[in-house]
Image (tube, rainbow over all chains, first blue to last red; front, side, top):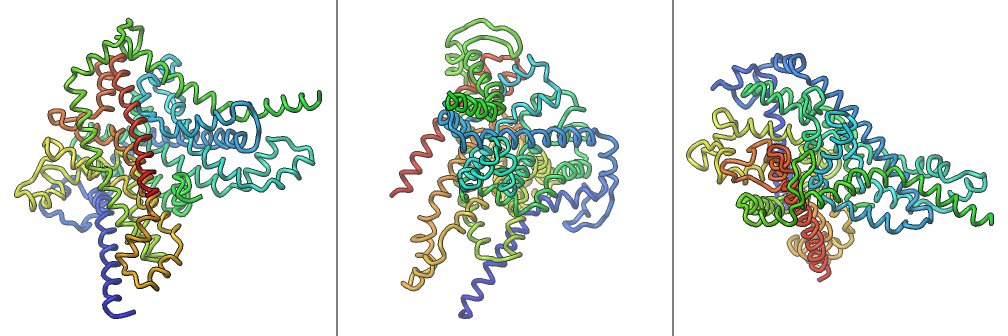
Amino acid sequence: MSGSRRIENWSLTVITFAGAVLWIFPLYWAFVTSIRSEDRVVSDEAGLLPDEFNLASYIDVVFNTQLLNWYLNSIVTSAIITVLVIVSGMMCAYAISQMRFPGRRLLYGIVLASFMIPSQALVVTQFILMNSLGLINTWAGIILPQLIVPVVIIVYKQFFDAVPKEMREAVVLDGGGEYTLLFKVYLPLNWGITTALSIITFIMAWNQFFWPFLVVTTENMMTIPVGITQVNDAFGVYYARLMSVALLGAMPVAVAYLVFQKRVTEAVMISSGVKG
Amino acid sequence: MAMLHNRRKHVAIAASLVAPFVATFCLVFLWPAIRMVELSFTAGPLIGEGTWVGLANYKRLLTDNLFYTSLKNNGYFVVLTVVPTTALALAIALAINRLSGRLQAAMLALFFLPYILPVSVVTMIWTWMLDFQFGVLQPVLAFFTGKPVPVFKNPYWVMPMIAVVTIWWTNGFNVLLFIAGLRNIPQELYEAAALDGATKRQQFFRVTWPLLWPVTALVLTLQLILQLKIFDQVYLMSGGGPFNSSYVLLLMVYREAFQLNHGGYASAVALILFVIIMVVSVLQFQVLKIGGRR
């Protein structure tokens, strides 16, 4: 490699690195703010570097807001959504991929089309429906409209299509039915994609704002993304506390991402059809 | 006879497998969609019966200035986000793709991380950074404009700023798609091009760009649909103001239905948004497909 090429390569790497540092600055700044005292946050001496390690605002938001309630609501609803979406999606995809029944093509057509349906445009009548079912301010009310995730079916169908037919025959000869095939053969063969899809479904459910914001009106039933905006209203411009509650709200998904980084990356690529 | 029996059993098992999805779909998608059309022809409140008014809601829509303002703002927001985020994501993906191993994974993680944050976390952080009095970005704005700017209270700044925040939040997803696309391009093509004496620039325009086009088209389409549905960031950062300069269609649906109790009128607006998104996404997909074939 020639000298000028090497300099070019190095400078490109440095620029990329600088870009990444700038990109992550808002999160850094939120953290620095959160470990300062409220007085320090708005004082003139507050510089760009962390100069205090004050956890007062974290303690304050944990004990003086309904944060723990919001965590509970978010964890329960996101977990139930994930399990139901994955199981129902897997079952539906298996039938479409491996079985012959009237309406199969129509059903897959609907799944593909509902990929494009903007569910946000349905909220008015979804709210009316939930109200008539008596599900306003309940976990079930938060969960139900979030159960349609067509991409899970599309991805599973692709993976089930690719399973070699010989795998079926052994089970069928032993007298195993379709449910046995699905849960004893097709699912174990596709654990990788199942984990990946579960993680992104959970993250998406956790981050959902619009629907929980509409269907929940009492503070103790709110999920994290909706609840933390109440702190904004209650505290006004107490930014150390606002940043503490924001970071606490983001932590579970941020940790999940950093731990399962490879799986998340894979799931995003596969579910958008760029990598199969 | 046994065959027929088996066939019936097969269909029954298939039905039991698809039932959970189909039942939920009918309950929370199909039924609300049908009810939305129905409701848009009535003068009903959000909860309760309304009288049939035919096309009155749609006629009113055509003379409602707020509807045109929202439509225009939706369009403006699309212009501010879709192409810029696609171009930025491509540049970042190319930069990351040059790196390898741990450094590459680390850089990708840094650019992707904002995407997995809840929207309210994102808006809280940026509202703080852009705070008129104490925001850390105000000196930067002051450097360019000569004085601090209350960005979410200024009709010229509000939409571009929401666009910046949105791009910061969602760009990682697009970067990831481009990286997957770049990895799918066979390395031999670059080697062959280099042997033929192609410069880096020629390699990009003759190899990378055409082979990456399907991914670019996908990113553009997904972004267009996503940005037409904007609500969260606007509601949380500017509430549609100032002077309705960031009022968008979904915000109009929300206000009419949940604050003004106009269920019928809100349904009409929602139905228009629904149709716009469907039509635009089908059209854009077709156009981009043709562009890709050339």
